[in-house]
Image: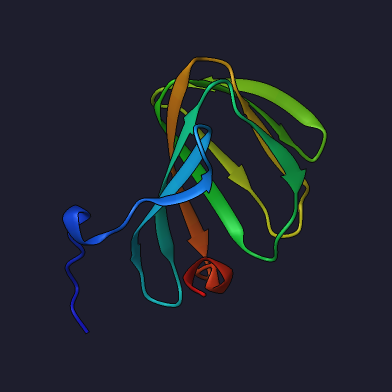
Length: 111
C-alpha cells in the first residue's frame, strides 16, 4: 500500500451538478481526508453518521448547524462534529471548499 496520494489520481465526484462535488484525497481505514467543493450557495441538509468529523474551511464562508448550535465560519476556521450528532452547513458565498477529515473512514464514500 502506498503512503502517497496524488491529486491528479483522485477523480472529482459529482454529488449534485452545479452545486456539490467531492474528491477523496487519502484514506486508510482509520482516517479519511476529503476535499468538498460547494457552488451556488449550496445548502447541505442536516444529517448524522457514526464517524467523527472535522471540517477545515479552505475557501468561502459557511453557516454550520451542529446539534442545533448555529455559527458562521470562514477561510482558516475549523468545526468538529462528534459521531451521531446532527449537523449540516450552508454556503454563504458563491463558492466554497472544505477539507473534511473523518474517523474512521467513510466506507459509503468508497462504494
